[in-house]
Length: 295
Image 1 (spheres, rainbow, N blue to C red):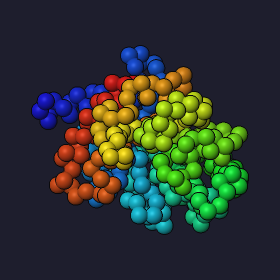
Image 2 (spheres, rainbow, N blue to C red):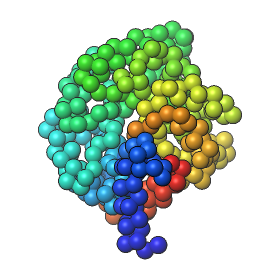
Image 3 (cartoon, one colour):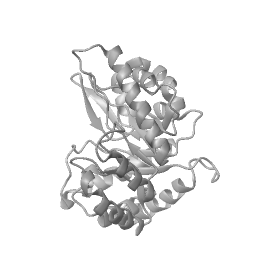
């Protein structure tokens, strides 16, 4: 397919996704945003243009230490970023932050700013275990921190999303402990951003059990894939590895999922120069097509 035909198809399917998923135009609406990390060397105007070409609704914006916008510069730069995306009909679907405690310096100010700008959800920073201490005791500590953060979110009117991530010291890697940490917190205050790739890495054959446990809490889906090579997980194009249509259908069974983030991580984890983004754009288009076929 030539570039013009590809972009036309992408824009048409993008419009369909913003209406709702499935054949029924009154079905559940869902926004899909690309994780912007690989695009961070572009301006937000250029990112907006590229997302519009692909038919994506927007981005998962990195407003965090080392991100596209440093938190201390957000008051000056985030409004302009939102406006630059809006020029192209795009928005910040979710804000990737460094926040996981209500008492972090600047956290409340950043969340209030985000809310004023129409950003309705943010990805939390992770909780991490000290592997030299009792995990059970630490779960109780994280539970108290989550309750305080949930109270702040409720006051501001914004939703936190906790993305499960693989790793021995990562709270939520196996999902059971994440359910314990969130306790009775409503998902409107802190929801789960279910990462399909990380779930399959850590859950083995028990992935359906973990998904069933957190399904009532799911506020977002993180779509990406991997395969095993020499006992190590290697990122691959969506639908070509362990993350299948069955996995996606199981994760979303019986629930409304208002937002998804598309992570194309098989080009690495560093921002790329504009001249190197051609294959990345093509990969986003291909993964988006796969995701929509599952929807």
